[in-house]
Structures are given as structure tokens and as C-alpha cells.
Length: 506
Ligand code: HEM
Image 1 (spheres, helix red, strand yellow):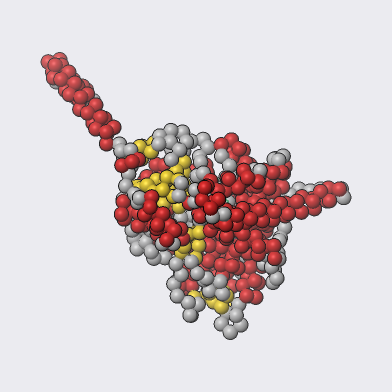
Image 2: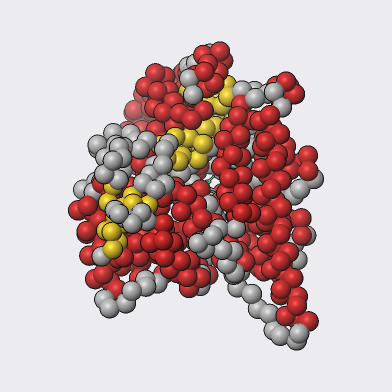
């Protein structure tokens, strides 16, 4: 460009050009050298000492406050800091543009994290890995198969009939669980756990397992309890080096017992369902299932792989749905004007119909905005992770060696006032206003890219169908005697205490 610009003034300037070019070359190499020098290494990254972080985690209830520690870390150290989580060194990243950089440079088989204790359990019991825990080609083959049946809009629409059946039972169950005097349902979260489990089971087995019956089967209660305890123990077992497991065996033992029960529960339901199909075939009937377990068997996957995948899908569909439903209705009960607008939107789309279908949701922008806002305020996965296995990367002025565990601090970015004004307030209209813009990676509740949530479309449909029906049937009000409920981390972000709500018939 420089040459072009000077050419116009003729040959006489050629020595000047040469000098200028030489000067430009020296300057650019000096800049490059300076840039290389200014890339710092991990040892120079700020962060709490091993002792002070361990103190925060274990003595100051830090494990359940991990989401708050993100905000504290950001304030104290800036957008990147390192910390040792037990035996694991992890780099925390709490700025949307840096999170974008990490997620956009993923290779063919992105790795979320080592989830070391989950993998250790599977190795110990000789189980296969499911989609949450597998890596590489093994992950890719099941992911492609499930994505075909879980992410394609047409495939997902096919589940709306089954899911609507589960929603109808939820409405009956909520009525049944109300206190007669004031319509209060205590601990709505526990109702939504059962709803989540019944919903994902209907998609996995195309049959119902009775979670919303007046008397819930004991095995179902135990499955839900196992998930809860397993999530508490996940953080603890990961934060403890292996040698500590021998000194304090209880957490690891409890963790394994929970997984044993979850694997047994899934196996029981799979075997049962496949047995019924086999009997129908024996009777000469044609069997053409439309449920996920059937698709997995049709792909001729080994039974061990099917057991582990179904266990992990069941697990993934319970707390995620329960937490989002609980927070959505908690916020709607505290914002009656938003609840009234939502009701108006649903009724105007449905007209005389009472049951929404998947296609109706496209005309319900407020409903979608409410779920987005709930996920921004209470991201189900408050901190996700990535391990870049392909090579070292440069990030925010630091050289991050390959295979470093990088923690993506989604809770911090989605409460960043620079991205979302009044970040602690529930304002679903911010998602509808053209004036507001935020960094696209500031709130990514379902993750991003090839390794993002494979259940996203099913989860969203389930949430939309349930919320639309609930606001049509009830006016939801806060517990007159209850106060504000805060979130806590239990691997996932869940309500710290029971949410009680009044469901008043409309
Ligand atoms: C509100 C509901 C849900 C939320 C917010 C959610 C969120 C997430 C997130 C953040 C991830 C990690 C993505 C990443 O690393 O980039 C994930 C992964 C996953 N989710 Fe969900 N999820 C939800 C519901 C579900 C449901 C209902 C299912 C099952 C039907 C499910 C199955 C999975 C699976 C199997 C993975 C692992 C995907 C892979 O590694 O390829 N999720 N989810």
C-alpha cells in the first residue's frame, strides 16, 4: 500500500520507499517481539493460593457458593484467574468475548472436562460412557445418532403429544398437592423433579412410569434422591485427591451407591420396555417405536452403551427441568404483570383451544423471553468447562498450555451489568427490545457448538408446554409467609430452599 501511494510521485522516490519499507519491517518485527514478550505464562496469572481457595471451599461453604465465588474472583482478579480445585488446576474465564474465543476454536471432538469422578466410577464398574462422559470418536458416533432424533425440529415436534400428556398429569398433580385453605403447594421443586423424570421417560421409553401418580413408586423417589446426592458428592469427590478417598471413604462410597442405583433403575426400565416389544413381535404384531431407546437399539449399539446413555439422559432431564420450572414460576409469581401478559399471549394464540402444540410456540415471543431471562438469572449450569486438547492457546494475554481445564464462568457473565443493565432484576422484555444488545456469549444456557446440549429442543418444548398450560389454569402467587429464595450450586444451580407457591384456579 505504501509503495502504491508513493508510486504516483515517480521513480525519484525509490530510495525513500526502500528506507520506509525497511523502517516498517523493523517496526513490525519489534511489535511482534513485544507481543510475544507480553504473552504471560500461567504462573503469572493471578488467583487465590491453594490454601485460601481450599479454605473458601470447605470451611466457608464455598462448594455451594461456587457461583458467587465467580463474582468475587472477577472483582478481585479481573476476567481471568487460576485456582486449584483440589488436585485440579483450573483457569477461570469470566468475560463473554474470552468465552467466545474458547468455544469458537474447538476441534473435531470438543472435550467438556475430565469429570474425573464420573469417569472413575464407570471404569470401576466396567460400565460404558454415555454422551455426557464419552470423548472422541466414541462420543461422535452416539452424538450424531441422538442429534438426529433430538435436535431436528421435525423430530422434536413429534414428542409434543407425549409431553402434553405428562403436562396434563402435572396440572392434576398440582391441584392434588394444594393445601385446601389457601391453594399453597409446598416445595414446588419436588413436584417438578417428578415432572422432569416423567417427561424424559416418556421420550426415552414412550411409556409412563408413574412419577405423577398420587402415590409415587418408591423406586422413583429413590432415583430422584440418588441424583440429588450424586450431584452434591460430584463436587466433593472431584475436589478431594484420590488418596483422601481412602482416609475419608464416605463421599466416594455414597457417590458410587447413587450411581449404582441410577444405572439399575435405567436398566430395569430399558429391559422392561424392550421385553414388551419382543412379546409384541412374538405375537406377530408390528413394532415401530418412536422413542429414543428404540432408536439406540435399532442402531445396533451394544447394550452396555445403551444402558449408560439412557442413564445419563434420564439424569440430564430431571434437575435441569425442575430448576427452570421452579425459578420461572417463582419469578412469575413475584411479577404478576408479566404473568398476566403471558396469559394474554397464550390465550390469544390458542383461541378456543386449551392445549398448545409445538407449532404454537413460534407465536409466543414473551414465553420464550421469560425462559431466556430465567436462564440468564439462574443458569442451570453456572460454570461449564472445556479442555483444549489440540495445542496451547493464547487467551487474554496468557499462554494456556494444552490440556488445561478452563472453567467458563457463565453465572458471572450473565450477571455482568455491562451486558445486562440491572442484572439482578427479572426483566424478560430485555430479550424483546431492539434497543438492548448484549454479547452473544454473555448468556449461553445450553452451551455452544458441537458439544452443546443435545436435549435443548426437547427441554424447551417441555418447558413451554408446561408454563403455557400452568398460566392458563392458575394464577400463581408467592407464599404469603415466604421470603426471597437464593440460588445455590450443587454442581447445577438450584434453589437454596424450598419454593412454595399458591396455585389459584382461574
Ligand atoms: C433447561 C434444561 C437444560 C439445560 C439448561 C441444559 C444445559 C446443558 C448444558 C449447558 C450442557 C453442556 C453444553 C456444553 O458443554 O457446551 C448440556 C449438555 C447435555 N445435555 Fe442438557 N440441558 C437441559 C436439559 C436437558 C435434557 C432434558 C436432556 C435430555 C433429554 C439433556 C441432555 C444433555 C446431554 C446428553 C448433554 C451432553 C451433550 C454432549 O456432550 O454431547 N439436557 N446441557
